[in-house]
Structures are given as C-alpha cells and as structure tokens.
Length: 107
Ligand code: FES
Image (cartoon, rainbow, N blue to C red; front, side):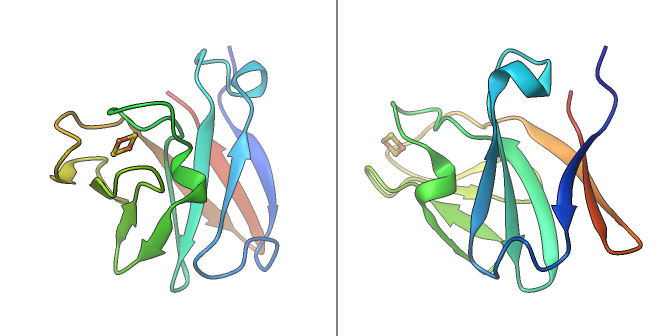
C-alpha cells in the first residue's frame, strides 16, 4: 500500500492554488487535492461531496475552500462541510512539509 507521496517542493504550489493527485497515484481510489493556503498545506478528497466538481478548482482562502460549482464550503484542515448546498464532509488527509518538500499521506 502507498504510505506517502512526494508532491513537490515548497513553492511548486502557489498560495491560493491546489494540485490534484490522480486516483491511480493515491491508492485510495479517489483523487486527492493538495491545497496551499497562506504558507500551510492541506489535503482533501478532490471531488466535492455535493456534485461533480473538483475542489482544487475552487476558491481557497482563510482555511476554507469554496466549491467552484455551487459555492459549498469546506474546512481545509478537517474536510468538514461549512456551507450549503453541500451537506456531507469530504475526507481529509495528512500533509507534511519535510525540509522543502511537500508529502501527502493518503488514507
Ligand atoms: Fe460542490 Fe455543488 S458540486 S457545492
């Protein structure tokens, strides 16, 4: 099983941007988005719990991501749903910065 995936170097993901790791690479069966928000990195399942939207394409600010399709909001740290029309949480994953490298721990 996959225990950790190297995402890249600090600086590869701009503040307010996200990168998607394909389902084949995560080993969880789901694509995972890695977000950069003001110097912190977070990972959530990329697919919105409300519909067919990529959260990586959303608006990332203040520890939250807003879905690009219907503006449901999720906590970047926990995946908890924060606003309608989304009603279900999305899975959160651990991300760590080791030296100047960003690592994702899926699952
Ligand atoms: Fe994300 Fe509807 S698809 S809020």
